[in-house]
Image (spheres, rainbow, N blue to C red):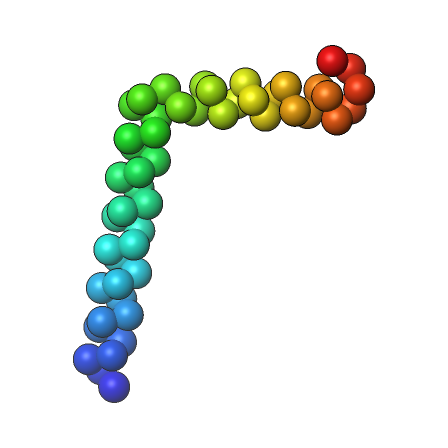
Length: 50
């Protein structure tokens, strides 16, 4: 039982580290600005302003 808990915790840590790594890569490549601009454009179209 204890070994299963350790395996689940290890898997959770690995997935979390992969996620953090992908976020950092996205931020360094400038994708955050692109996503923000697209979200703003979609929001303006939905409201009917743009």
